[in-house]
Amino acid sequence: MNKLYLCVAATILLAACKSVGYNDLTPSKQPNNNLLPVLEIKTDTSIYPRLLDIGKKKKVVDKRGNDAKNIFHKEVQQNIIETTGANKGSISLRLNYENTVNNSAYSAVGTVSLLALGVPLLFGVPFGAKTQDLEVEVQILNKHKDVIRTYTEKVSDTEYKAAWWGYDSQSIYRKLAAENLKHALENIRYKINNDAPEILTELK
Image (cartoon, rainbow, N blue to C red):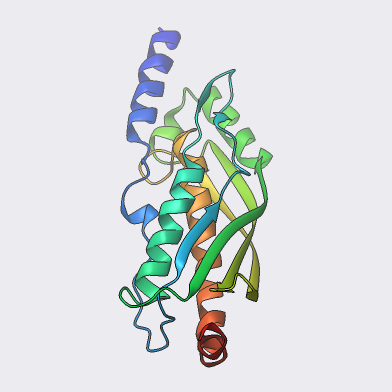
């Protein structure tokens, strides 16, 4: 009976977890009076593997690299450069460092909850958590391919596995990586805006 109950509870639990949606992968559009001219957008997200190990000997296609490309393109096109005009150079994204680890404290909470037949988990008690450290680099080059600015941001965030408000074992990686990247790019955007008058001169 307990085994049947746990199977049903596990099914409900996984179905109740959130998935990554459009808003998670879309940076917010911000007013900007210091837009740079049109720049070619380049990305290097090779730090992410082709397959992602999500535990229990299960591997899935790692979508974080493609997510990062899409997020960067949207951030640049919406908040950093003009959409029309002559191309004056390029702006590139490179992910220099990434490390995602389990939060053992929440894994222990999940184990204890299972001893109580999983009831706490059905009410949204976290059954796991992951923390990602990410280093993001953005470079701006002029049309002669000279580097005129390099910006680097180190960010860290934690997301949770939980019913109703948290994520499942696969989605948590995408959500974590997307939030970290959006945060880093937001900080870099502020720096670019501050440097915009000088950058505009150097891109001519």
